[in-house]
Length: 405
Image (cartoon, rainbow, N blue to C red; front, side):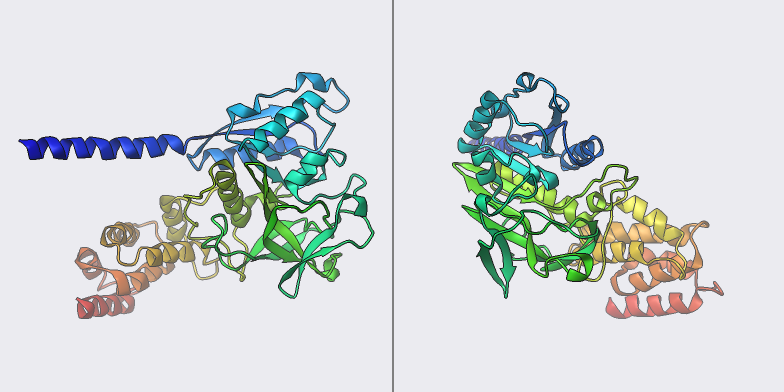
């Protein structure tokens, strides 16, 4: 009886611990927007979607008054939030609001400076210390050195000149400089980012700042010929700041490839969690881009497994193999997990059973099953032994599965 009571007490304690952890990771996020030289009407709702879909954040958007209007009515209670995401570049805030924001960060509040937010508030000393580096709005050597990488080392360069530039929008390779930080741990060292503005010649106080990732600003694209900072972290008082220069959202643009980029989305989500908490619990997506090509999520999220399967059913050899690679990556990530592999096997058997699936799709499935299939798929394979289009692939898969058993 005592053992049962002890076991029950232990179970309740464990359940309470996990529920407490779950509650601990329900962060409140505030997106500040309302003025920008970029398309904040599009970007802020997208940023909210990206945070909310992690299930880690409850996110609200607050807009400042329009340019030239009475800014005294903008006075959010920053202390209510675990992290403030700045999608803002506009009129100065009141002294009262600035003081409240500085106190919030000093006391441990998290901040994410997104893209053109590093153009803002050139005359606000504390803000520029928080973001580390900024550009435009008259920034020069008076505001701090240029910071970039050269020969693998971070350089602080006090050469006189403008602060902030970028060439034509293009795809470019992001290089991780700290592979052990919670935000970047597990990411490919190099990955191709979708078409974006590559911010260059940023300058600022750069105190208590670490650059997590850079990108080479190619002179052929109007760049500096230097490895410029893309992702940075800054500490200010007890606060944590994540600064991403990625994610351009242009006025008049109908599509936003930089915001659809799986690399931007993943680093933004992870960076915001770190700013809020100091830890990152999110997994790296299986289709995170590498140096060979970009990955864009048209709905700002990866396809579900069911969606991938429906795409594979329509596959023919003249089309992109993207969805095949997505499923292959999931299978390889699941190696050693019999339950997950069986769930994938069941989905592939459904493709083999489907009258809508193409012959090319079924050939792909048979190749995958040949090395990871189990007894579960054998009955369906045997039904296809007489198929004129598939008999060779079926024979190969059956022979290989049965030889592995």
